Length: 181
Image (cartoon, rainbow, N blue to C red):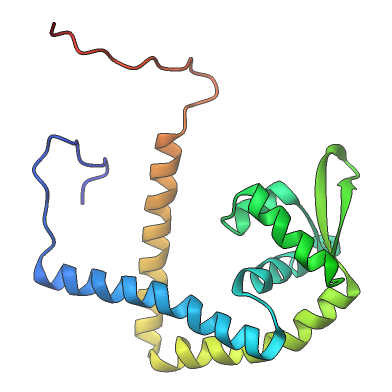
């Protein structure tokens, strides 16, 4: 497999029929699984999938707190979108915001006792849904293959994102001009 992304002038490497079927099934699953998980969370706990994910992420941190900027990365969300989500959770009493005690330029989201209690009530139903939809339909070898595939794809995405980011110690690049008149 090529490590570098294809050059725009290269001929496309079209998917084989087996790759196309796999890609279509993966896309369908990536669309349907969060929808199914969210439906259960909405019905049982009145939480969206992302709200649950944010609350769960805070519950795993020391002191149940995390910088908003770090939480946005974890939730794969823009900071402004996360700020609106945190505002909704604040109105429900599930989180609060405070300045970061180590650096007041940052704001921390903090899981409240009420938020932790709500998360604790929501978790068993969510885990049961995850188990039913994902783990119970796969044997141990399939689970291992799924984990390995997910790790490889995530690592490739991470490398591409790192390659796309300019290095902090290098000067900004100017766009190349076409030398032909």
